[in-house]
Length: 247
Image 1 (cartoon, rainbow, N blue to C red):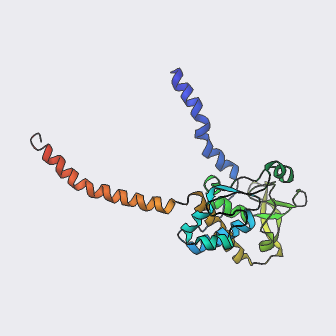
Image 2: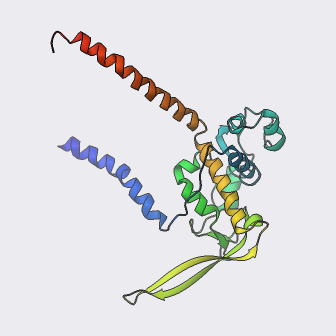
Image 3: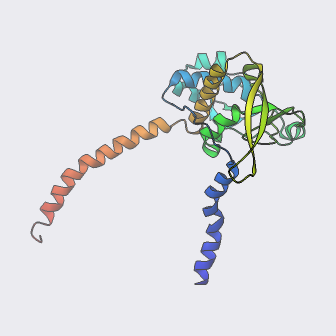
């Protein structure tokens, strides 16, 4: 009984993780239009990632030559996507010092290799579109999905500047209820539709980067299931032949 109690006590933090993560979200996430089979979207997302994210965030578990899986050649990778490395076999690392980054941003920018698996695509899609101007923050930016985030809005030239509009109303019981809405105060280079599509491409690439071999794994899985299904037929009749004297 004591052993069972100890096991349950050790498992309780693990079992509570999904509930805690959901409770901390506290908002309705927008659905990310993910399609990792769309190579053009993945190529656009890789370009955005290299130009806007890889300056501060590394992706140390991802090598440049894995971009060949989305239809790029070594020459295209070297010419368009390699700014901080010399060989296509090198990982996507950055030169930024973690200690200096902690001083600048309050925390060192995390590695993004598996960010889509830890945060979910919907959260990333909501987060990257949820920045708004906040003069009380050191960076001048805040985020509706990640309050008091230290990261500035690196895509602001594309999206523009949003402001948080807070309105108060009363519910059926007379209690005050606040509603939050982001309003575009200063347009960027892209329209709202174009910016959403750009973020979708970036998130699509982050999902791919979290597991580049996913499509291969799924294809192999289907072949294995097909093989097992076909092997079941001779195995079944072989079993009947071996056991016919008993049955």
